[in-house]
Amino acid sequence: MEDYIIKVEDLTVAYEKKPVLWDIDLEIPSGTLMAIVGPNGAGKSTLIKTMLNLIKPVAGRISFWGNPYEKELKRIAYVPQRGSVDWDFPTNVFDVVMMGRYGNLGWFKRPEKIDKELTMEAIEKVGMTEFAKRQISQLSGGQQQRVFLARALVQDAEIYFMDEPFQGVDAKTEEAIIGLLKDLRSNGKTVVVVHHDLQTVPKYFDWVTLLNMQILGVGPVEDVFTDENIRKTYITRN
Amino acid sequence: MNFLYDILLDHTLITVGLGSAIFGIISGVLGTYAVLRKQSLIGDAVSHAALPGICIIFLITGTKETSLFLIGALISGIIASSVIMYITNVSKIKYDSSLGMVLSVFFGLGLVLLTYIQKIPNANQAGLERFLFGQASTLLKFDVKIMAIVGLLVVFITSLLWKEFKLLCFNSEFGASLGFPIKKLDFLLTGLLVVSIVMGLQTVGVILMSSMIIAPAVAARQWTDKLWLMMILSALFGSISGITGTLISFFVPKMPTGPIIVVVMSAITFISILFAPNRGTIWKIIRDRKNEENINNYVLLAEDRK
Image 1 (cartoon, rainbow over the protein chains, first blue to last red):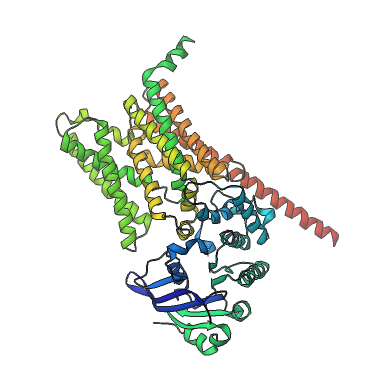
Image 2 (image 1 turned 90 degrees about the horizontal axis):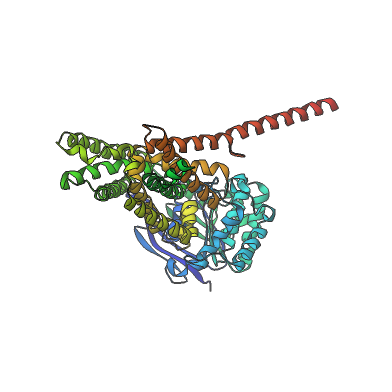
């Protein structure tokens, strides 16, 4: 039977008393490529940030392989939204990707040869080798996204959380990214993606979570991603 | 030659110059982080907020000791920055608004107290006004020693926590997901900034402090795309301004050290914004014009071919 490695139970999150997520129950099996879809303001980013221990829930439990996040954080990677950082920060592609190694390095330690090699490998995987020394302010949107993806790859995790990795990227990058995500899945990794484009869900993903403050469906795309469920999810809530 | 020799050995000049230079390095290093985190105005808030602390210490103790004043400044600076954080956390008021509000309330209170103090007989001797615009010439050897210790501490912590601070400034959420205690790092960095600002009050004063935090970093950013180089340049600009300002105020009569330091720093920043390669305004104008010419030539060529 399926082996659920991520479990969310009775999760409620509120900003200033206004609930954003209400009584979420979610179980994600190992080796899936899952989309979280829902309208704007449905709480998609909030859900993954809460799972990553970045937002404190009002109630509920989250576990990875039966443990809290802090115990398993080295096996979990995160790709934040591209727009969440200042791309005029004085640094280059190589340095940003290297940040993915910081967790493994631990306090005070400087990157060593092996970290540099792993970083270059990840940069190569996303097709950015010739841009390794490029200032990040000179990257296109698609290139920025590839850099963020490489930073998560270099973490060498089991579970990957990605917040809108296809936001504002060119078609070629989108194709490259989905190729990499499918590779991760074939290697037994679990990938959870906040996704916007309903049309590409069946093509890209094998699992889906429909979210609008509450969960309106979780499971394999062919079972859950029905017209009726989608309609229920996108009905505006007053 | 004798003249030069005298200058180099002038005790006050050495003390003041050294103090200003060390403070320039510290503000350059910490200002780099503040500017990159878009928190450059925190220096303004903390320094303005220091004034009531200084006045209250005087009213309570009647002291003339600088170190006591600075403890008062530190306490009210910490209170002010905590109030700013608190307001931003519990209400919908944005960071800049709450900062502006707290800054003016604290500074207003400070001015009220200062006016009151000046009417007390003998209070003028305490020389509290020196904290408004700074009076570097009152720096003592002891003050410079403290500055040197804080300076070494700042450099030591920054190099020890280099990658942790970089994560904090560039992408704190990602840093938190890696398990780094981002809130504690934030607290440490802000704490260092508050301590340094308070220490620099005697040199540049409450009102001009923010330019010492912002200007070196802004100038340095113009010349480089590397964080470490930006920080070194920023420290260099800060200390050059400190030394130049001290020298000018020593040889030109009636020139106040603090404001001169700030004017020199501003000149460096102005030049950097205009003339730095790549990021400089003039450079950009030239590049745009070249691009336009290229495009025009291309269009002309294309038309010729028709």
